[in-house]
Length: 129
Length: 348
Image (tube, rainbow over all chains, first blue to last red; front, side):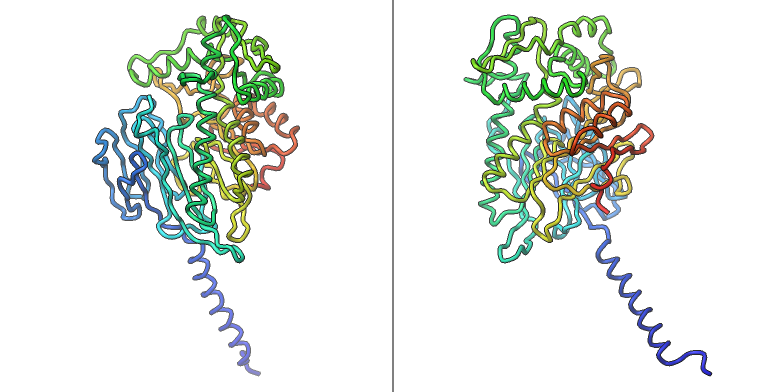
């Protein structure tokens, strides 16, 4: 008696191929959506920042040099400094997921995280904290 | 002062994607504006065209602006009697006001009773003192001070909600104590958001989310796949990252969060936030945040402040006694506590 039959091998092969395919499909569906940050100055898009470059930088937009942003290597970004009275923009902390936003109202600046590609059903529509 | 170029409707319209919905194709649009209720208003909606979406967002803006002016406690507007007008005439004379003010004040009185005074719109005298010390303390942080308790206690003598005299027949409001003042900050935004959401729904919007500074109202479901809205609640104790995020599935529900991490100032290394406990006259120390979900955003707003101001057991009993209201408490150690059926709202 043979240890393996031909049909057993086929079943094992099908299972193997199936699970590998399944893993790739899972990865494709649930992979974290790449995001970018947009900075608006009084409703005008002032700057777009790629979040997944691994770079760290501290910068401002030309329209308002008193408001300083900080991009971290882990892909998060925040209001670092601002000359506004309430500092609510700074208190908002680091942002990195599509759907998050923070604003400095006295300076008319909005920092928002948007998906890099098309919005998907499972993306967050709004984030509160 | 609102600058002229700022006053014009500030809208960021972005077409995000097109989604098939049966025969009719609805696309997803987003808009934001900055000036109303001193916060950021965000709209996400599905519409047949950019024009249709612009009509909805214009309607939302226009309506919200009416409420913004009526419920303002800091600024005067030409030809409008608002909450500031009522405050300015405390102990002097009744002021004739729009029905939208009367309705909101009556609603607020109901919430006062429901929450046993944990949210009180007549608390202005005390909140004013904290506001002054906080504003000065943020600007000049080296000299930041706490308000003296004697001053708070004295002001607390003038917070009797029954001294708001509302005459519905005459459409007037009178504060019979000259030293009292209204502060509708804990209710007005959510109340206005709800009224505006109802208005835009009547106008035909079937699928949208309006967030007025975190007072979130969801309308219907998303047409792609008839899915509920995904609303993320972030744990403010932790920095960032999806692990610290809870995603909720909301359909025709409102969500409001009260937390200690947005508006605050620091005195001698200690943080003092802006939600003042009506019992202790000090910032409430029970939780990091409380999020309420129920149908009416005005109710959610009032409850979030009230429940933030009470011990967990008391808030839990209150929320569990209310049909259709759920809550999540984020504790100082970063852990969560949930009301009875809250977990059914968490996206799996």
